[in-house]
Amino acid sequence: MDNRAIGVFDSGLGGLTAVKELISLMPKENIVYFGDTGRVPYGTRSSETIKKYAAQDIRFLQELDIKAIVVACGTVSTVALPLIKNNYDIPIVGVVEPSVRCALKATRNKKIGIIATPATIASHSYEDLIHDICPDAQTFSKACPLFVPVIEDGRFNRGDKIAASLVEEYLAPLKAQEIDTLILGCTHYPLLTEIISDYLGDGVSLINSGRAVAESIHGLLTEKELLCDNNDGLHRYYLSDSGLNFKKFASMFMGREISESVKQIDIERY
Amino acid sequence: MDNRAIGVFDSGLGGLTAVKELISLMPKENIVYFGDTGRVPYGTRSSETIKKYAAQDIRFLQELDIKAIVVACGTVSTVALPLIKNNYDIPIVGVVEPSVRCALKATRNKKIGIIATPATIASHSYEDLIHDICPDAQTFSKACPLFVPVIEDGRFNRGDKIAASLVEEYLAPLKAQEIDTLILGCTHYPLLTEIISDYLGDGVSLINSGRAVAESIHGLLTEKELLCDNNDGLHRYYLSDSGLNFKKFASMFMGREISESVKQIDIERY
Image (cartoon, rainbow over the protein chains, first blue to last red):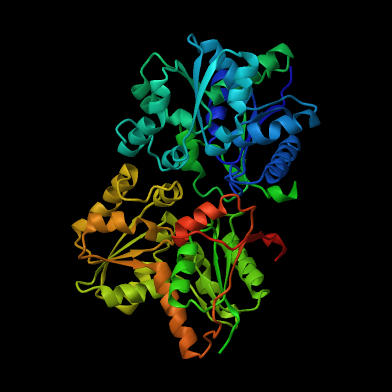
């Protein structure tokens, strides 16, 4: 039993889709979220800078007394996590490995698609890990540079012409390869689930990386007997900018209104 | 006569469309460009942060011995410039006033459209200045949040379905109002000139803010007898990140290959 919080961080607010899944799976857990909105996006920074930012983000969360860390940021999970994960004495889980394990469990024809930001696709992290675990799996990856701006513009509902055109353009080559599983390798992408499902059809399993990482943390905390016995989990939100649009984006990514307040911190001090 | 350089800065690389116009109008002038690519975008930051960033950008340029400053950044021009322009003893020109003066010269029916990023539109800077100078002008403004990501994704040529759909969606209400002049209130937008012209027709004048600011600086330097008598202007480029994609974006915004090298600086030191 451990009533300390689970710390979650992302370069921005997309990681809230992981918080949504953590809450749905473990409603009693306390959760602290940090979104580095003052320095978003990470994907275009050098790997040195990304490592520095990730270390600061983790130092901030550690000061809040946490028992585990969820790296809900694709860029940090692929670029920095493999290099820094042994520096910490609490469990730290990124989005790549849990998503890959879910995808390998879901696939029947071993043809797995991966969509993500250009930086994540260029890192080959998902493909490399899939082939390490299952050498005869086939992977088909596609960078989707416009999905994040289109989603942040609120265009993710059925009937949006721009979102539907982009889904068709980006996914046509993966559909042609007859993938039966698609990893949504960016925490923003679950918002496009309906449009993507409509295009690919029911036969293709979509792997939500936030859901995968939540299941992974749940398994880990259960195994180590570190689950919380609170009645109601307490959820705290911190950002590195003023949080001007926090309510709007938070309710978009969490799928409901957020009543909790949000605090601004100076991440450069960590 | 003054052979010092003209300093130009932007939060990113869009300001290079202004450099292109400066070079085309004044090929003998030395130009120093600073793109704050390590801290882009500015539009989502607080006005305090934007003022701090702008002051640092100007301090860096001043150390390179310049005779005038072009603020090729819509956000700084609207949010910070009115507050800081009197702090400097060299001419400093933003994109708003030159664009508004060009638009008022071009319009015949006094119906002027303005397109820009959400932050610039929300500031009402263009509209307010138009009404200050010409109280009976009518203005119609539209925020175009997806133009920057779509342009940066290389989608600005005739035939691009996504760009054409967005142009139609964003500009339909302005077309319906029968504007005869449209201010492209973001230095990225000149790349969409063809698609926008195709949609609005030849009867609508498009005001390129980079061209407008270049003409304004040219007038100012001529009047003060501060033009350069070099044979060939020297152009230097500085960024606050590693410049990974500089060549690609620079050639996109300048409309030609860039042979000059680019240097990285630590803007936080200024």
